Length: 157
Length: 86
Image (cartoon, rainbow over all chains, first blue to last red; front, side, top):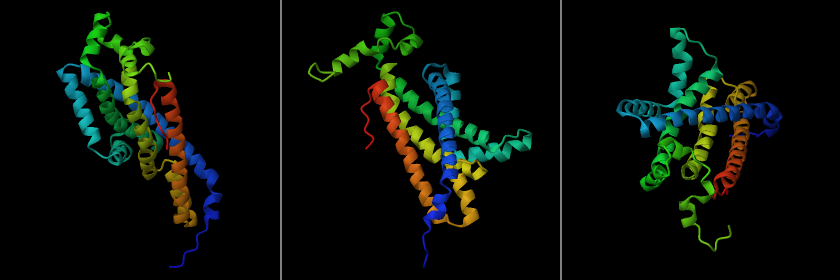
């Protein structure tokens, strides 16, 4: 085995690769944003929705976390043209990955919703906030009791 | 809401990196011109697969480091998540 490495050839293509890296970053960012929106929607459905909506969210999560992303993208790219929907490769990847990421992010966000203690929700309710309002009230960020308990007076901030 | 943000921010940031590396490279199979796809295209022309993919691996590491560094800074600034990059 005598293989001479020639990195010059590869490094000469660096501009092309960097262009590819930008596309990768773009794809990742768009996927993440879309996935977070989907995740937020389904996590709220799963946490606060009725039985039907909860089941819908469950089916979505189970379906998309238990099938590989590659197969979902193949379905979008090679399967959908059969029924007349034709997308080019970038939107296909974007949509496939977004749906896949949305399922995982649903679970991550739901874990976040669960992490709020029941007593805290009751306290928020006592203060006159609705379930949605107490979750969107960020004005209490700096003075919330949980932080002040956790932080000792001797800490630097 | 602030609690939730603080609790799930590390998981979210982690998942972003997972998407960035593992997710997007899947797109190369159906011909998206992202990092892996570009590398495959170039390698089929000049047959320098080993060098090309070593360079690509390096680029992915750089990309991931940039992403995780900026996410850690955002987390520290916005949610006071004590994140370490290294």
